[in-house]
Amino acid sequence: GSDPMRVAVRPLAAVLASVAGVRAFGPARASLPILRASGARLAMSTGAGEGSEEVAKAQAAAAAPDPETTIFDKIVAGEIPSDKVYDDELCMAFRDINPQAPTHILVIPKQKDGLSRLSRAREDQKPLLGHLLYVAQSVAHSEGLAEDGFRIVINDGPNGAQSVYHIHVHVLGGRQMSWPPG
Image 1 (cartoon, rainbow, N blue to C red):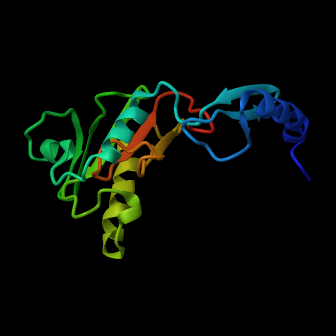
Image 2 (image 1 turned 30 degrees about the vertical axis):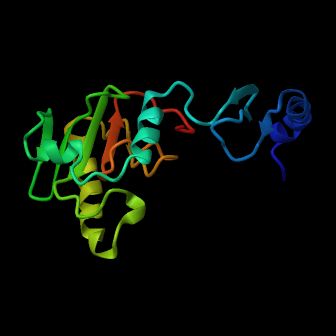
């Protein structure tokens, strides 16, 4: 059947929509608030990561032309220092400089090879993509995250809050993650 919370909130959502221009249960738009019900809670959100510096960076990165050289290319080349936790012939992993969890590590391919976004992956890149995920779980084990669990995130494009257009896998752990993530 139907979700009782959604049914119970719908009349309130309709009232808010007519009075305040609130959009209920629809797709997120940066300028329109969304009404969401979760359990007994009712929250209003723009759905755009209000106040999120990462979302602002992602929007700016999406508006810029796709750079040939990213900050990750410079880290791979050793031009920018990093706190490296893993390195092999295909990829490396290092601690994020703006951690979103007690443990926040990025796994990146050493050669971008056009792989700026997951949505632009080619079939011949499947082995590399699999390797990145294998390394992510390996790093999670070495960081002591495997027993309690961890989160793997790949942001894609402006709505996915991707701020560096060089594919990368976030390994986050060391705390209870919430759901939904964003």
